[in-house]
Image (cartoon, rainbow, N blue to C red; front, side, top):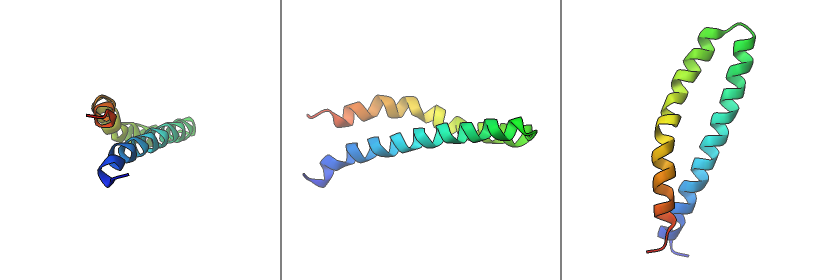
Length: 69
């Protein structure tokens, strides 16, 4: 398999990891918030905005990369 063919699969796997990490970070954020650190939880949520902002573009472009020409 040529290296160029691996790129879409690699990006897909990286995106899966990113979404799994996001879910874990959200769980930890809720845990922190329940223990009275609302400021920390809000800061984390603010940082997670970038993942949400980019997710739609990633979802739209990955299938195009994975479709054979």
